[in-house]
Length: 472
Image 1 (cartoon, rainbow, N blue to C red):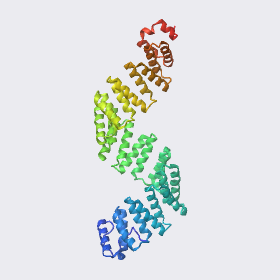
Image 2: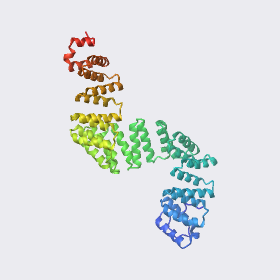
Image 3: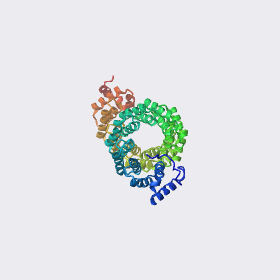
Image 4: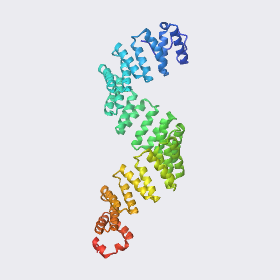
């Protein structure tokens, strides 16, 4: 077997591996053209290894085809060609190469490992599992097969099975760092955060300069509500990889949660410098300014977010709310309508639109918007109550009564809805029903009595009414 990590031998006029790969490939092609391949087999093999290291699959395939012409039954060449074909997404051709290699050497572990990768890429999950299990049938302590099978189960959210396989991997090789990382990931997805943290930290003991490890540790610490420690973890990730935009973004979120708004904004601005198309960072800056009451600045950053992503409906909704708050109602309405055009089932947009229409005196439009929101969330008490109040304003008493009944159905102990229902029944001259609703409202919330006295002073003082209500 050729040593793919070796330098060119003394018969070569080639430069060392650290020099220009293009020149080495060119010289190899010249060797092939003059038919001297037999004299330079190790040279060509070494250049193929460089093609692997420098990600030059097309050149690697060209050279391997030449080798396979003179040595068609070399299983190692077949495996290498299959790896290159995988790199350029020619999975069917890669699979043929691995199958040929295995026909020549059925116990070739590397061929089986690479074949499993190819099979998964082709969606042949059962075949991929079979290939890996074939290795384990011969060698049940093969850590690469155990780890790869664990990854295969993990990618299909079979976390318990993955944990079993990754645990066996580190039993075989306690220094297999990636297995600790994947165990952390599995436990994180199972919401077992203490175990996830433990395995991420074991991974970092073996690979302390891995930015992704510190980043994932930070995510788990946030989920455990250890926010200050999470910031430290993100800082370590950034110390290793200063252009780690996701770490900046997450750090900004944690700082905002802690109320450190200025520092949070700085993080998001740095994230935008790394990735100017990061609409979420613009949006989060907008949120912070909105929280601080600086609605003009909030609108500015929400606008930047939708410039980057014209379908970012959350930013339109937030900007619309800001426009509403500063009295720019038409702009607010335009943004709410934009959200609805992008996301028909967005309750918040329909609700915000309805409230704005109500405030503008467009009561019929408000009714339609409330109804649209209720179609999405039929058990939303606030929507039904606001719809009932709107019908009351319009004078559509029966629809108001129906809406108040829906409120009571959702929340039978809501005194306000009983009081609203009583008011409608008074208007409809259904005195006994109104009195019954008032009795229930007063029982549920005695403070309603004061509201009733303000709204109906003449009725409250009536002796007949007091008698009906059972008051002395």
